[in-house]
Image (cartoon, rainbow, N blue to C red; front, side, top):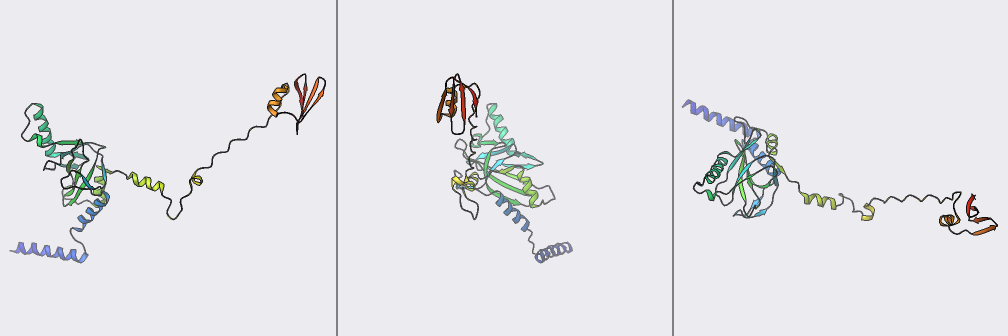
Length: 267
């Protein structure tokens, strides 16, 4: 009798304390639930699990391996992540037993009804449910159609017995297994949109100015060149002075003297 009264008093005292502090025993779990769902946006599948109604975050697996069963199976295999490793638990054992039975030519009963697949690092899927429980967090996962078959499973992140990790600690643990695929369409939209508050610049203004070609070096005349070479460089002279064996080609700013058809002076 006295023990029962003591327990009741303890419960009442705890309730009064939580009420006084404005804290609900479930508030921590609710906050974690909201944070997880904002980080890993949920996907809504159709009722028969044959398609997706609303697409959420695409998750990329960072660890080996997760076992999933086809959505035609009524059982969702539960995987666990603990101490840095994924475990398929009893479902993985069951799956291996089925494979072994098929190998020796004696498939176990209802083997054909359990179509399973192991997902490895780098493969992608959706999350259709998140449950923050008292002893851990459970994700419900759902795949795209693979050879016309969609797969599903649960993955539990159990807490160490007797502890309640913080929200940041739980998020860090989940991030060891899942990475959210970036939204490439959003990135492409950002590239096309002008900066906030600014106008889009014309393409001509956005383009970097083309480098100007270096100026051609001035034409030069060298001693020993022929009349044809000089004309090719300077063009036809304004006038030609014939002085017997000597000829002078007169240009606007230059006089070129030829002796026997070769340049002997230019000034």
